[in-house]
Image (tube, rainbow over all chains, first blue to last red; front, top):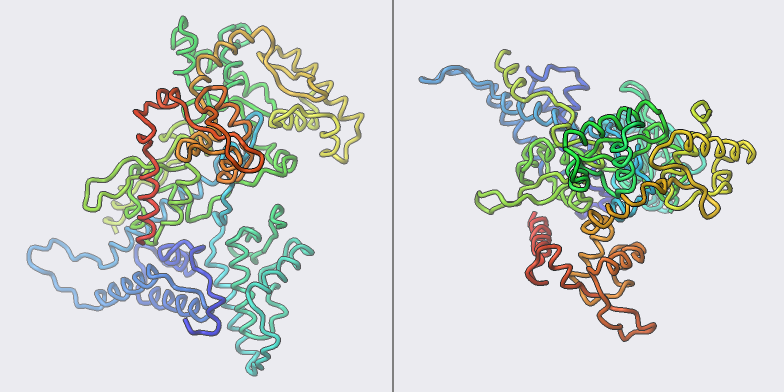
Length: 249
Length: 182
Length: 182
């Protein structure tokens, strides 16, 4: 908490949780969900958490419990298989986790399908439509149904790591450090001019790692507030950041 | 043809003036002298007829009732025209919670959290506030936690006829079998 | 034919969703690239087309604008329908206003609006008209606005023994507590 950068901390709540992260890792590394290389996935999972900690994102307890669970499964996998009496068959220590992942994925898909329905007030409208009559004051929530937000972390981590190598001499210029609040304002200004940019281009002017982090956290906050939107036409294409039309507060 | 069916025309104008989707039951209550079978047929005729006419709005069956709604291909013009319309938005987390409640109702917050592996308090409050879910009683377990279910506003908003109209998801039982086979 | 005219269809859906009669001027403002003459023609086409279709409602020119309205020959059904069904029906907004008045009475319209964050004039008049709320005096503040309270018809209609019988406040508070405990 005494970390001088703690003021940059943003909640990790815009991400969908540890199971979502595990599914992302499974998809990204193209591993078989029924035969998860648990040691490898655990290592990658922990690398993610460490990276998020490095860039001052608060790691919720739920992510830590998942890390502990993965560690436990890993240790069970290493134990010699002893068939106990009365036990019909050796149970795979991963079975419970796989069941949870599959069940969670089922609902994640269902949520995406719901988002595709013809939604009243978005796709279809009744006669004499008054949006406030219907839903009361609109609650602004972020919308990342089709986008895997962990891809944003992946891309940022690549930028961060490449910059780390090329910028070995980091000069501290206290007068030039800026806060998330300031950076958010700048980003909105830039986006008003450009409307749409590649995610990686937002980091062009950030010469120092601390600035990279501030930009990243600012983007996350603006996404959370619904001022910016993410868009990726397909899995392999670069991520685009778009300014939402109606948020000229 | 509905054009020759005076009952269909009367039902049509009732649906038109009704503020919320009009149910067959409500129509029957109103047109007391006419049999339910005849009313159901007339509504079916109307639905087909409106679909064929291909206007910018049509008769939709939602939340157990009928309502005139614009076709989705015109949404961009409507949103553009009515600047006050804030696009409907729910976060991925809230949509996931909504999906779980929809498929598993009635269900407690703790049970939803077990499925998602993460705290869901803020999504549950958002969904309660938006009136997409509501309290369905308490579960008779220690602590007597609230049970949640979806509302008819949820059906109305997502254009679902009834809760059985939800998009089908991969059956969990099937998945378990697959796992055993491995 | 309006069916082949995409402009007419766009105008049609805007008239349909508009809360008030839509004027040619408003349409021109929106469809900037299209000439007024063309828009006027498209609206004329729509009017003729709807007239020919002979549905129970049609496109009418009212108050300098255009609006879909039921045909006069159906007015008897609508009047009856409104009496029968709308008697017990309230829009979501009106229900919210009613709930606020019920819990906070006596309360002024401005105070209700402060809670809901939007203008509530139409809901207040609907509730007055349906006799679910009534004037309970004036508040002794500048402007001396009316204070509102619920009526016995409100209790009757919603099956409440008395005003203390209102159920959800405690429940809502309990929910909030549950969340705080997390």
